[in-house]
Amino acid sequence: MKIRECCICMVDFEQNEPIRYLPCMHYYHLSCIDDWLMRSFTCPTCMEPVDAALLSSYDNQP
Image (cartoon, rainbow, N blue to C red; front, side):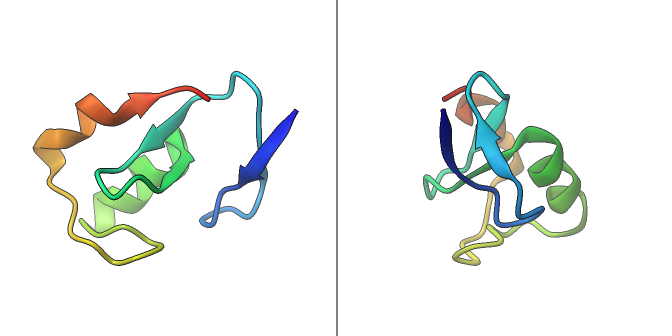
């Protein structure tokens, strides 16, 4: 079952694939957003600042 597309890599999410929710509730492939956040502490969708200390509480799977 496909859920949605990661706006970083433009690939659809697959069921049971690890994803990360940001505090703004946008979500991405875990590897995509982790790489993104190494360069920028903002959400790639809404540009909301992301506090790195909060990220571990937003790990999730669909």
